[in-house]
Amino acid sequence: WRVLLWIDRKILGGETQNMLGEDYLLGLIEPYCAQYALDPQLMYIIMMAESAGNPWAYRYEEGYYKFLVRKEIPTKHKWPPTLLSERVGRATSWGLFQVMGQTAREQGFKHPYLTALLDEKINTEMACKIFAHKLKIAKGDLHEALGYWNGSTQYADRILTLYNKAGYDQRHI
Image 1 (cartoon, rainbow, N blue to C red):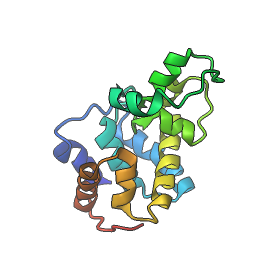
Image 2: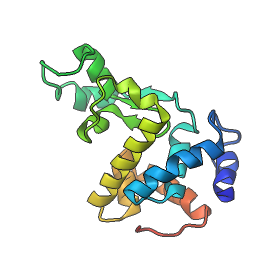
Image 3: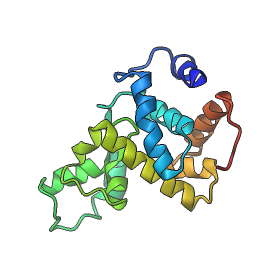
Image 4: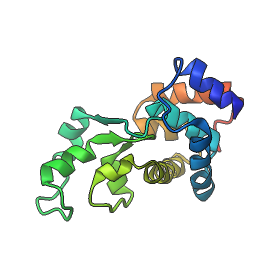
């Protein structure tokens, strides 16, 4: 874990916005990683790359909304927010792992409000569930799974570089 804390400070650009503390975040990640058979070190690196440990991080992704979300939600949706709020929420990445609202819904997230993904426990569990699914689709290939997670091979390269610097050189897990 000391190597991962070094990554926080040195590789990811100085002091992070980690509001919860390293010990808390590491303790938060481990049980969900065990539940979904994931490496906690890898998930920690993903989390720090996504939000720098800030549970309140969010980002609306207009391109995602225009091309994927706007057309997919039926007019009579079952959630309490307005249809527009649900659509915008699905096109937003939320919390520690920047879980996309649309992806969370696809993976069975039932809470009526996607803002619940700002809760660090809910976010971490959903992130582990989603990443385990991406890893399964990728047949254990980390680079491919990371590409599915973020939609970018450059992102996958960056995360694997950090993972390797932390002492892990496995392409498959």
